Image 1: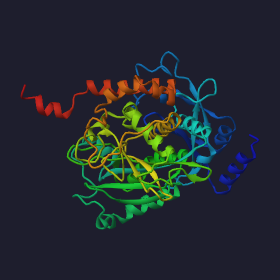
Image 2 (image 1 turned 30 degrees about the horizontal axis):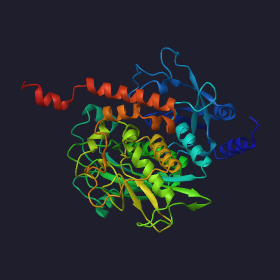
Image 3 (image 1 turned 60 degrees about the horizontal axis):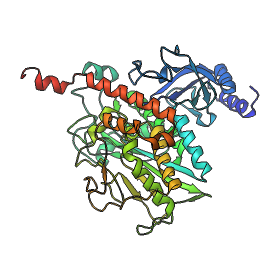
Image 4 (image 1 turned 135 degrees about the vertical axis):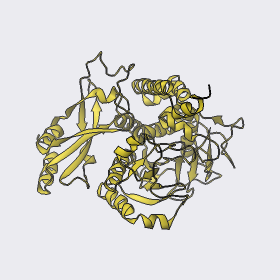
Length: 452
């Protein structure tokens, strides 16, 4: 390896006593797949990349092999995919002494972006924006529930009868936050040490539920931070004797967990949305919204990637039910915030905490750029409750099966995200639906076991 920057990076690691690294990348479900390597191996990987078994793109979130995948499978022999490290993602792991971490992008056999690599997908969309003269800044908010459980107790209890971190419905509670001050410090300090700056952390409405707002950044770094926050939060919770879930709806009787995406476009160092007012949206913002609203139903399978995502789509619990937008309107799928200020931005509210940040941000940005490129005008902004379809607002898909069919048939999605990615993604969601359809739920047993 002769790259001076790589040599300096390794020398700095050695000087700080770092003696191992964790390297890897995120799969289509947003699971971080990786391994420990020695510093010598890290040196080699920085110089020429490394091989990583591509089964990570050939199995589901539970490590069960797909029966319909084309990018890999028994027909290919599950060879190694070529992974290329991104040195800009280097960060020490605060809870693993003497260990550094680095993320990788995956390449196909021709050296191009791997069709199943979410981070490579986002890079491709970013490049499209750059050709149009735009860069993007994003940030993510996550809601998540915490429990006084361990991985072992979760499985022993079959994920039922769990003890929440704290009882009751205490949104924005100083008291609950103070009662869990050690955990709050562990989250805030641990995330900062892991290069994830948190702007806000507070309780939400529900037993043991919190919301975190991650500071905005260039969209690729924002996706890295959002994806890594989930990884960090699971480790921090474990260190505190707790467990955490980012499910969209873990309990039918409680609110769901959102994962809103804040976003703005930049040109020549300026926020393109900054000069907008409620009565005068500049074309770039208007068309950005237009593209997102127009493609929202077709891209829902990406924004809402699990069967459980759609349990959140019920009236009266803040989750949007229509392809809609509005200025400072929390009932719409897109909320415009901060008009007339440097913080003017789009808040995408359809997404939940179960998103893969890379694919969700890629879809958001690609749809907005599509709107600008094609001059897509949005429908009228919603005033009041935007959750009902009144003839001007299209209802969003209510199941993963329906959303997957829409994505599969979307020529626009294939145009803006690439034929190969959409084909692979549709196959993975079709598999997910089929696994759900064959499962026998506790609800079915309770309802039918004795009565029929």
